Image 1 (cartoon, protein in one colour):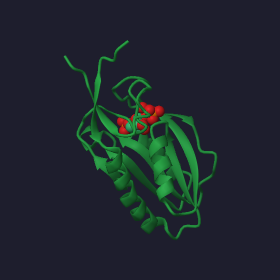
Image 2 (tube, rainbow, N blue to C red):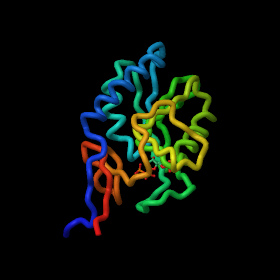
Image 3 (cartoon, rainbow, N blue to C red):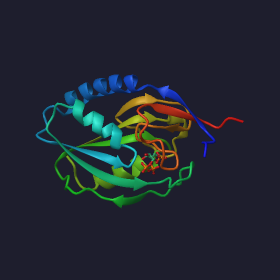
Length: 178
Ligand code: PRP
């Protein structure tokens, strides 16, 4: 069965890697003094980004995950954010960096920040590979952003369309011809 959509490359794997190197340098500048940073990846979309980011960070880090869902398989975001899996570790008094693949309406990131702040971390910062500022509904902005993009339907590098295409090494734009 053929696909009814086409994926055009929007951000190459090389451009992503170069940007992650820059971001890692900035994060080391911010967190270089911390005994052990906790990187919190938001599943599922961030699994590729966090894997590349953590290997560029020459720091002592713990990696943990939260699974949050706001989309289901639909293309439109709902306002409801569900936490399907919480952290294994406590973060009280610790330095935390939340790693998100894309900030769209911002409801997911806003919800997670609110939840984690309630646990008393020393520092809580956020990074998103992609940001779609024109779609924002919640009052939130990641501290570090890889690429600010227009309101396009994107896939790849961890981001899915109906649970497919997460394994593309680049960020692509989905197009529906005809
Ligand atoms: C997507 C994406 C972000 C969130 C962004 O996750 O990975 O986490 O939506 O949207 P928002 O800014 O409008 O809240 P999704 O809920 O689709 O789950 P997934 O990561 O498992 O694909």
